Amino acid sequence: MRVAVAQFCVGTHVGDSLATCLGALDDAARLRPDLIIFPEFCNHPSWYDDQAHCHAVSLDLDGEFLAAVVARVRAIRSHLVINCTLRLEDGRCTDTSLLYGPDGTLLGTSDKQTLIGHENHFFRKAQQPGPVVDTPLGRLGLYICMDGVIPETPRCLALRGAQLLCNSLASFAPDEATLHIPARAVENKVFVAAANKVGPLIPEDILGQASEQTGIPVRFLMGAGESQIVAPDGAVLAKASKDREMVVYADIDIQAADSKRRPDGSDIFTWRRPWLYTALGEDPAGQEQHYAGAEAVRCTLIQLAATGVEAVAEAAERVAQAFADGVQLVALPPLFFLPDQQIAVPEAAAEASAEASDLLAAQCGEGCFIGTTLVLGNPPQLCAVLLGRKQEGGHSDLLTLRQGQLHRSDRYAWSPLADRVEVADLGFARVAVLTSDDACVPEAFRLAALAGADTVMVPALPLERWEMQTGLLERSAENRVNLLVAAQPGEFGTSFATCLTEDFTVLTPWKTRPFDGLLSQPPVVRASAGPGATPVDIHPRWAGNKVVSQGTDLLAGRPWRLVDPICADGGRAQS
Image 1 (cartoon, rainbow, N blue to C red):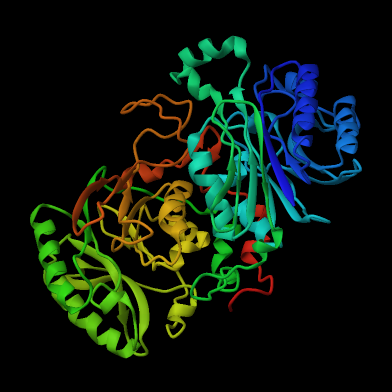
Image 2: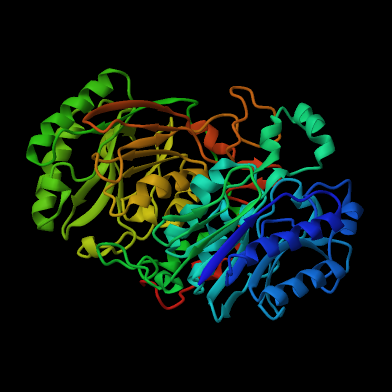
């Protein structure tokens, strides 16, 4: 099938907006697509004087605007996803995506589930999940802008069988195109077609005034463009420019979205454990998190010259030096003490783990901690661990945190599973440590954030490129937690850290840095391609602010009432 995404600018005159939409349909039709996706708010920018104004410029399903669009759809014989604001009988409105068939039939509607900023004042959020529509092209799901900055809505659509997700957005943020859109595709192994806007996102005649009042440069009051089509493996098949109206397309085999297998054979949906995620479907009002960590914590990411027995002494030496330099958290690659970090015999790996951990723990003074992955216990269990000396009740425990693997991946099928996410309160930070495979599961990071983690460490042994390029970075962004990823340099990348900043919420005064346009992606520090130590300061305290825009909290604002596909066993998940 051929999928096209159209990006354009919409002004404040609804009649002109209709002409723009019809022109975009004609432009797209020249490409002979089977499906066209339009951006968000095709009738009017999401900027209103009051509720009456919003209602006045919104549309009726059977009104002239959509009737004209439907007539053009019939003429060009293509499926269309168009997003607009619709009037409700009670005077309120919804932000709604509509899927029309080539004969003009309305096949499905989907209201926005996660409203951002001022949208909370004007729109009613979705009261029920949007449909997965079974069409001759394949199974299509719809989501809208902010719905894709956090994982729940696209995840639920994919779990319900969607092969292609259609995302209509109107965003100024460059991290939509570089991070959120591709991450939603590859973490669910589905196609995503995303249409963004260009040009002013607010009335053009008040751009200067709005910029002066908010301190946001005019360029960030514009749509960021880069509409794109992404494959299930994360490859960007087509991408539009950042600032020009245009249509781009890709020819896809939609059945490629039916395989959920990783290179080791693991199925990313079958390995899920829905009962473990029940907290994601509970009212956030009863799930308060308290973030009282330090403003800054000195950390080090360590990469080693080799793996195996010879790496143990090097690791101990580098750890000792880091602690002597005042570092409090050290991140080491997983299983570095085994040749090529591979487990041939779990019992032997457990013996090697004990020897390595004893040497590492000997380097830890009080208040100093090391994150890595070990094989512990009998029977052997793959565990992400935090080694260190934390004084509790008059004694010192060298194994501060033991996090067994939560999901049964094929490469570690022998390992018993843990049944909860552990968080260690170190005083200066609340830290979770996840195994590399668990870090691929968005629900695992969500649970860590709900448990109050302000920092997550991942000793990473990636199987796919997306893990190091978008996946782990997305986990930090969508939960607003500091992240320490330790990996041996390889084809998929190197170790890196994300460091939260004090300034975050859009349309609030920023104190320490100029507004950079990024919606939720934090600054990143990456290690070089060689062995060595990469120092980085993280900021646990700033994890307490998860308000991306007024009224929109990255964690508490999740659509918790609509996540049954995540928390209920759909028949493809582990017990």
